[in-house]
Amino acid sequence: MMRKTSVILLSLATGAALTLFVTQPRSVLMGSSARAATSDTYRQLNLFGDVFERVRSDYVEKPDDSKLVESAISGMLTGLDPHSSYMDAKSFRDMQVQTRGEFGGLGIEVTMEDGLIKVVSPIDDTPASKAGIMANDIITNLDDEAVQGLTLNQAVEKMRGPVNTKIRLKIVRKGQDNPIEVTLVRDNIRVRSVRARTEGDDIGYIRITTFNEQTTEGLKREIGNLTTSIGADKLKGWILDLRNNPGGLLEEAVTVSDTFLDRGEIVSTRGRNAEETQRRVAHSGDLTKGKKVIVLINGGSASASEIVAGALQDHKRATLVGTRSFGKGSVQTIIPLGSGNGALRLTTARYFTPSGKSIQAKGITPDIEVLQDVPDEIKSRTDTKGEASLRGHLKAEGDEKTGSQSYVPPDVKNDKALKMAADLLHGVNINATAPATGDKAAIDKPASKVAN
Image 1 (tube, rainbow, N blue to C red):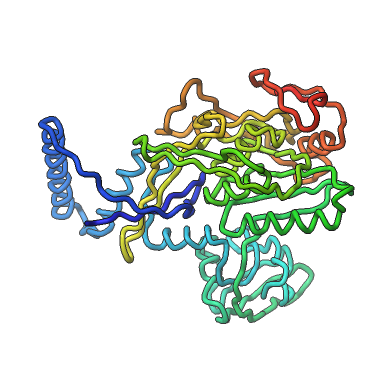
Image 2: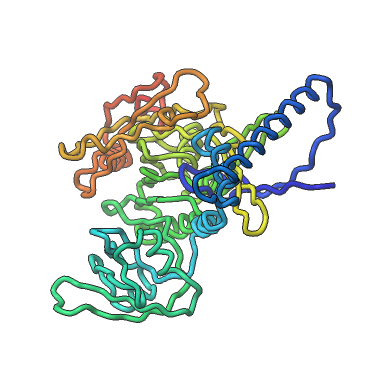
């Protein structure tokens, strides 16, 4: 009997592998209406074949047959919803690298500026940092090839490669008259999806930028480090910053939520058929020992981020501060198409928060809404339209909501949501309301409540 193996994932942008499962085809009796539908489908496939052959024979230039087929597949999938798509073999490999959060490379975060590669920052304890590469360095050549004319993705792909292989970089540095040439040996690089610091002297601040295979491990490590450095008795609580986090792996969203929960459902996923419903529940053991938690969200918090925020909000485990989230409430399955043929990214389910709510095209409303002060020159670029604005999106159950602020001030001194979170953890009385239903969400004892 043939089996179909598929991998389920969840993210706003590039897909990520989540859960591996095997299904077997169901045996059904086909009635006359089903036979008629099947016959109509075959007629449509014949039409496709006719068009394909006409293009091959009559197009002004000889087309590439494989590209024609890939384009047809891509059109079929993108016509379903904004998150279904076809990935060619290279895109599929890139997705796997991204979700692993680990690759052979140099250890530098880069951006494109005036057609050249600019170093944002070297990652600690990597070949780049050990070689003395600095923020704002301009990379002009990779081996003997000029960077000018390459896209950012092409340049990054050239810098990545097998561990223990060499690459030569030519660098222009401000204040240096002559370019610097340095030869680096690629090493195993781990993407830091979790960053942490002490906020004040008694609050643990943790930012999660994406949900890859390293995220839960990184979260647990930082919770342990901050608890030790601050002191368990002195620690007032935690700020979990999920702003502008586009999502990632469902499994990581579940285990991150589980880190703060002792029991109860975290999320359920429901497909077209009732028997495909899956429920994920928390295990005993809250790593933060019941300390208060504030979660920061905004219009750029999507997908896996919304699962975490929704689970902690529904269980009254955290207070959500910021602006309404993106509203991506669907799950995608990555279905490999065989060696060298890429994969399908197919929407297969919706997910629901523990209280049974779908956030599709609605988002999650924070318990306390905080709008940032945005500089005039970028005001038009600081709102995210959200899932409801995407053409062909899955429709919401009830009213849809679009538009939410996604600006995060670069200077923490201007970060109003962060200040609000710190005030809440310090017990400062807050008189703030979010546009919600009037439910109450407590972050401490019942006497200390904030309006939802």
